[in-house]
Length: 271
Ligand code: ADP
Ligand code: MG
Image 1 (cartoon, rainbow, N blue to C red):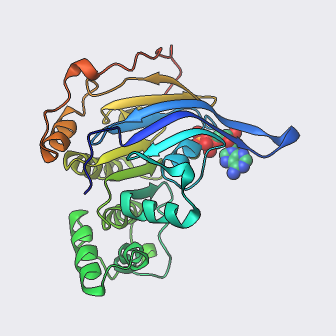
Image 2: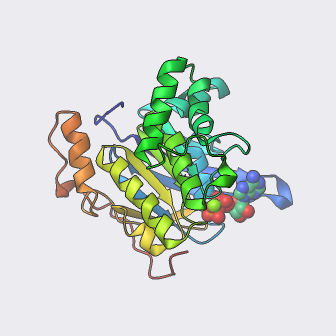
Image 3: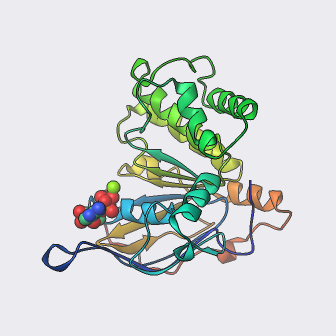
């Protein structure tokens, strides 16, 4: 895992995103500024349409902003072509989606193995890592199962195994528990916590306040703008920041580095 503490792993500067043109134009992001450090566990909340998924797509290099700058691990991704972006995605980021996005009629094992096929990981190593990832999510004995033979919670755990098999430094999850019951939600959140304690940066988009509560930092969007940011690391995920710092052999950032100094929103529910 790459551990860099010289700069935030994510530095977003005045990012805008406009979809469409003319009358049908939608300004999905209207000037987002954000720094996320290695090892943070961040929840992003906001009403439907506030720009959460758009922001995640940009952070995850699945899409590019209309304006502004985005540095991922110090790298200006706006300067990368599609191929380079796909390499960055594959190496650095593990994605988890609400609808699991597993390939049907393909075993859990093969689903987990697939990103490593694209990353040209040799077969023996690929299989070893796929098995290890499935074991990590408690499904080491279900590798032969097809997605439709698994519960929603199990399918999401397969998706998490797929996300971590490439050993990414960052996990991006868009409403990962939105389709799950409370037991499965708990299991997924426990996995995220474990990954965060290993020093991985975890960013979770959610509508559920109790899911957001587990994160060390809350960022709230409204109409394409950040309206609340509890900053880091005072918000809690201190253990992970310390772990990341220890891994990088530096002193953990103290509470003096917290507070983002942004206005708190005065309410709105967990949307
Ligand atoms: P959220 O994830 O918070 O619900 P989104 O980022 O999906 O919000 O959407 C933000 C705004 O951008 C919404 O008004 C949405 O309709 C619009 N939007 C999202 N994706 C597209 C797209 N591909 N084309 C046009 N408009 C889009
Ligand atoms: Mg969304």
